[in-house]
Length: 271
Image 1 (cartoon, one colour):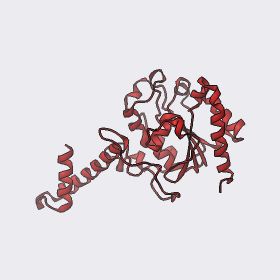
Image 2: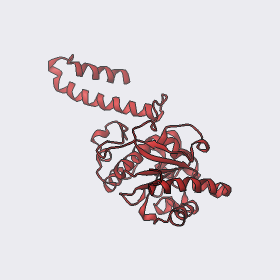
Image 3: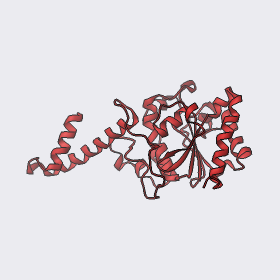
């Protein structure tokens, strides 16, 4: 199917199809172009082939009119999808609807979309919802969520509603297991669209899966944390997930060091 689609794509562009098929060839060219973009997305997402490129190798500035999705679409015909064209977080959530795009839909109670200021300068990205999040439909409301709230309010002196909080996957993995590659691939475009709409100045990536998804890196988080990276010109700070800190409280001091760097950047002390 891939070879046939791309062959037809090339023929349509070159005008090699018979004149009697002109209308069909235009439609076929549109479909094939969408197919090509979708296959390029699958390549970057690491599905069936090795992903190319590194998102952190980007320019230091991101114009407001640049599309951060970079060709990453949520499905084969996403150029015409509501999600891809959403102009606000509300429109994006409506476009996701009662999502059935991966197997996580079977066991969820609620889709956990995200919460916070749609114009936030600071965005936190975690892994996926847990039991409490699934029941309430809001990210980071359980024990790990309380720790994150303490970091935001007591540590950073901000209000939770001042920042934006989301996860890589929007539905709870069974028994809080790690999200699987196909689940991340199905949901990743929605996270990217959220970032595209919010355009935060800083992203704090919480835990392995958030860091690996955004940076397209397999480097252990223990080596990435504490160092600034770039996501399409947006400063990104990897750090440990609050759930990890509940199991390893001695590492809270490392996260605090990371958060202090974020505060310094927010206050312009690194300028």
